[in-house]
Image 1: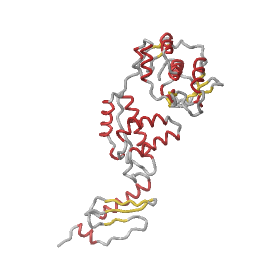
Image 2: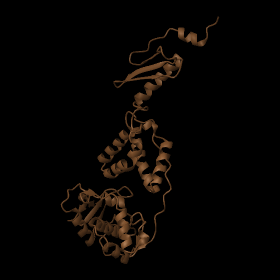
Image 3: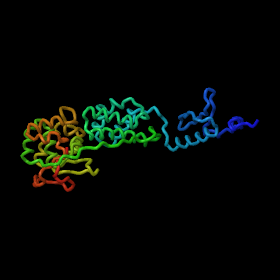
Image 4: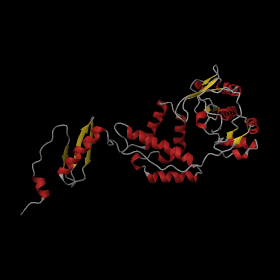
Length: 329
């Protein structure tokens, strides 16, 4: 009787590998071979999913190389919470808008993804999240930005050494509405300003109208960005990624001076009580309605509306300042 290949393999003498290169073994309660090795003080022990010892040895060699090069995940119990903590740390280190990222996690992402293992988050989970947020009447742009934060968190986990996720998270961005176009005339601006009862809203309206600052640029302003002695304001991060300074108008200087009084250098310029302003859509809607400008009430505040380029030509403008042709908060 001629022995089959499996019998020959099992009766072959099994040479020992070199110390430190791991080993394969055949536990009594499994038909498959298992491999085991240690790297950086961590023991990796898994099934090779094969009944062939030779294939198990090949798997062992591949896994050792993957772990040595950082191309494999050493902990498949990583949660989305842990990945998002990496994102928050990244935002803090790089001076990004930490409170905004934290708010999106606490209010939207955590209730759905909190506690989930990262390996269980894929296209199905993202589709369910999008469906949930749409049921809450969230705009496509808001959903895109929330998922972009989650995507960045996964990318940080993928780029870490050793890797915490097998692959980056990807999603198809939802179609967003085009910015509304139009002009805000001086008469409309005056009516809007007259109905601003909150200092922060009045100051933001002034900066948005005069210089075209975006909502994200305004909400991330720190007291240290305002130089009242030089009559300038600094934007740390603009659309092209370059910092820039803007020379203030008289009204803008007076309003900003009132906004920063009594605050520390790293405090937010625009606050509601003791908390930084995060969302003022409700306030904006009330102001536009009171000013008899209902067409602006549904804009993403001041939503791309433009004012006459000929206005404010007498104000001093820094060479890096955005042309005064938009009020995009």
